[in-house]
Image (tube, rainbow, N blue to C red; front, side, top):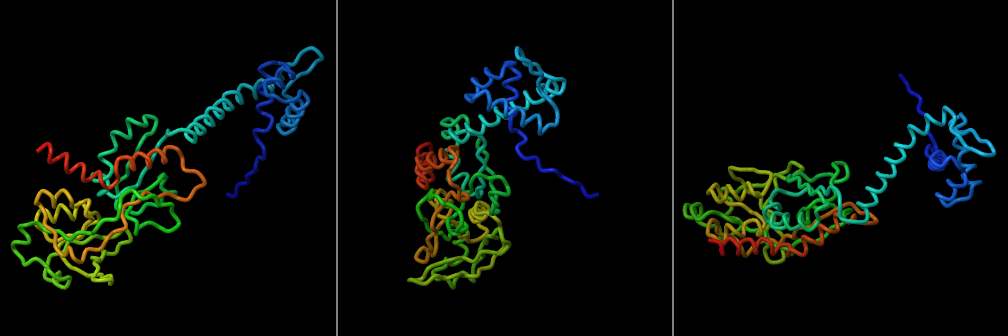
Amino acid sequence: MKQNFTVRHGALDGVEAFLSVARHRNFRKAAAELGVTPSAISQAVRTLEARIGAALFTRTTRSVGLTEAGERFFSRARPAFEELIAASEVARGIGQRPAGLLRLSVPPAVVPTLLEPMIASFCQAYPEIELEIVASGELADLAVEGFDAGIRMGDLIAPDMIAVRLTPPFPMMVVGSPDYLHQRTAPERIEDLRHHACLRLRRSNGSVAPWRFTKGNKAIEAIVTGPLIAQDYPTLLGAAIQGAGLAQVPSPIAGDAVADGRLDTVLTAFAVTSPGVFLYYPERHQVLPKLRAFIDHIRSQGGADVSRKRSRERQARA
């Protein structure tokens, strides 16, 4: 069944004036409270009455009272208007200070290497911010899915986004466990990968990512094969540590495993450099204070240096 909808223009016009007069039972006191002239208050109330279609006040030369319609309107409008004012104050507070829910879409690999070392200090520094981290390999539509920002490697970010660098560029490392490399001849050329079990990444668009290299000034994409396809780097890294094959992963992710001998690097002469990790968000005229606070805090923690700090801390505790 077709429904008819009426657009109500200026539904709140005159409500504040009405409520003030109803509280004071006096047009002049209401005008003083709102900082306008008594005639302006009278006009606002007359316009409201005309729009509603009922008289709200009974007026004499000595007093102002509410009609039955006015009493009912006052009993419903006052709490609703007060709630609206409270909602405006909450929104204004979020717009003026770091507060509210901050939702971030991040790849799983970023959580232990970049975010874990600074989550506690951020929450302590900004107790009015509620931080929600959604770890997923999918490239989220920030606006549709209600995220304030996302974190991804620079080459995966759409050009219409504002991107803020969080780490310097880093190489994409090809790594394998010592046991795996002991069983097979370590590759010395890119072409040698056809003789190896290569662990591959499936992109969010469904395609399997080729391995990327550089040879001189030439960019090379190698189509490799192997026993495992995963949607995130930590899974590939774990499989490589267990000896399932070679994996090409960002160096900050593999750094600890290489440093403690669980993984060895190969084909380092052909390593391609990733532009680094960026926080990104839709273009807006103003960055909300909660997001600005997060950006400033994560930068103050040293960005990519965080993973190296964690590695040194672990070695110191060992």
